[in-house]
Image 1 (cartoon, rainbow, N blue to C red):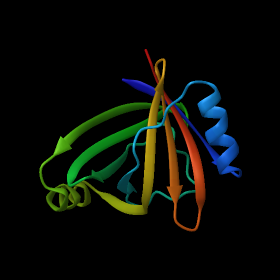
Image 2: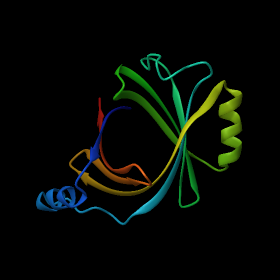
Image 3: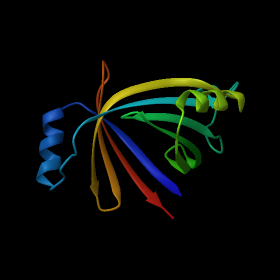
Image 4: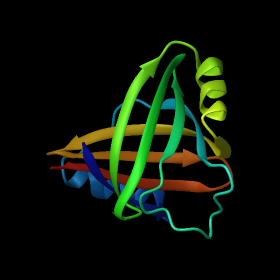
Length: 139
């Protein structure tokens, strides 16, 4: 599957929530999400992302998910693969042994909605504020 994802920093929380409601978008209940991102050893944030595989471990309510994203034509358009894993710590060790290093860890409270084939996420991150993420699978 390929996906296109865009993120926006939200400066006015109430205005966003009112705009979503006015369009009939009802956000689901909030839940806590813990993401650990990885990059290839020796890759830096100044390097190109195109064609480079980036793993991620995600935990939601004691369920763990492994994902791999590989940007194709730009950083927002990726080949994407995801599966649930039983043991986060063992998967973390496997990722390290495949030559990847941890980069950023993001813990957030997330609320989700669906608008046609677009997934909508409203994320609140401590000290960073609110973000709106739109995610759309494409052929």
